[in-house]
Image 1 (spheres, protein in one colour):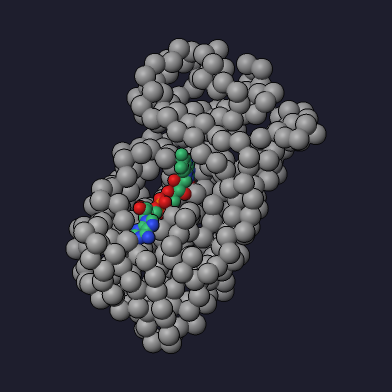
Image 2: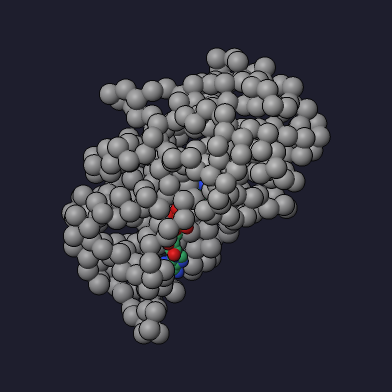
Length: 375
Ligand SMILES: Cc1cc2nc3c(=O)[nH]c(=O)nc-3n(C[C@H](O)[C@H](O)[C@H](O)COP(=O)(O)OP(=O)(O)OC[C@H]3O[C@@H](n4cnc5c(N)ncnc54)[C@H](O)[C@@H]3O)c2cc1C
C-alpha cells in the first residue's frame, strides 16, 4: 500500500511514525512513510514499553511480540547511601493489562517495521521532508532524495513524526517553548556483575544528583546519571565490564504550541520532549500515533473537524505529561538544595502512602490520563 502520492504522508520512521503507519494501514488508509536515515536506528535508547503502549498495540500483534521478546519489570527500588529506602511493585500482567516490558527501542522499531511490511508498507529511506504548503483541499510537500533529486508530493494529510528537531514543526512555524537543564546527563549500556535485583529498576539518590539503573538483557545494564562519576558509584554494587554504548544528552522539557494546524499534525518528540524519568518519550509518541490514526481516518472520510480534535486532545495530554515529568525530574535531580532535602527526607516516607504509590504506578504505566480519541 506504499504510494508516492498517498492519503497520508508520514515524516519520520522512529517509533511514532512506524506506529502511525501501522495503525493507518490497519484502517486501509494509503500511506507513505519517509525517513532521512539510510538505515534503521540500532541504538537501545528507550527501554521500557509501558502498559498503555502494549494496550494500543495489542490489535496489531506487536504487543505479543514485545512481551515474548522482552522481559517484565517487577518494580522499582530506591537506594540512599547504599541502603534500600523504598520499594514498590508494579502490577503483574492480567487479561486486561500487560506488565511494563523491557525491550531496546531498536528492537521495538524492528517489530513495528516487520508488522508494517506484513501489511505491504516499507519505509522510503534516504528521503527528507523539506517544506510544505497547504490549502483547504490538500498539502503539497517538498522532499529531497539522498541523490539530490527533489520531489513534490500531493497528499491529503501530513503527520510530522520527525523527532525533536522536527522540520515539519518548523514549517508550521510553531514554537517549542520550555526549558533545558544546563548540565549533560550521562548514559552507558554496560556489562555489570551485581547484587542488584535484575528484575527491578533502581534509582540511587546521591548528594550531587541521581543514578538510574535497569537491566537491558543478559548481564548488560542501562545506567543514566547526572552525578560526577556514576560508574564509580556503581562499583559499590558490583564489578563493571565492557561498555556497548556510551552517550550524553541534554534534558529539555518542551511542548509544541499546537499539535497540528489544518491538514498537518505533529506526534512524538516533534510535539513534546522531556526527561527519560518515567519512561514516557517513546510511549507517548506511540499513543499519539494511535489517536492520530483514529482522527485521520475520520477526516479522510469527510469529517475534517477530527484533525482539530487530534490537535486539541493531544496538546492537553502533552502539556499535562510534560509538566508532571518535569516536576518528577526536578525532584529526582535534587537541585536546589531545599529540593534535595525534600527528595532525601520526604520521598522515602511519602513513597509508602497508598496515594503516592498509585500515582507513581499510573505514571510509569502511562495510565495517568484517559485514552481519548474524541473530546
Ligand atoms: C539516550 C536516550 C534514552 C532514552 N530513553 C528513553 C526511555 O527509557 N523511555 C522512553 O520512553 N523514551 C526514551 N527516550 C526517548 C525516545 O528515544 C524518544 O522519545 C523516541 O525515539 C521518540 O520517537 P519519535 O518517533 O517521536 O522520534 P525519533 O525516534 O527521533 O524519530 C524521528 C525520525 O525522523 C527522522 N527524520 C528527522 N528529520 C526528518 C526529515 N526532515 N525528513 C524525514 N525524516 C526525518 C529521523 O531520521 C528519525 O528516524 C530516550 C532517548 C534517548 C536519546
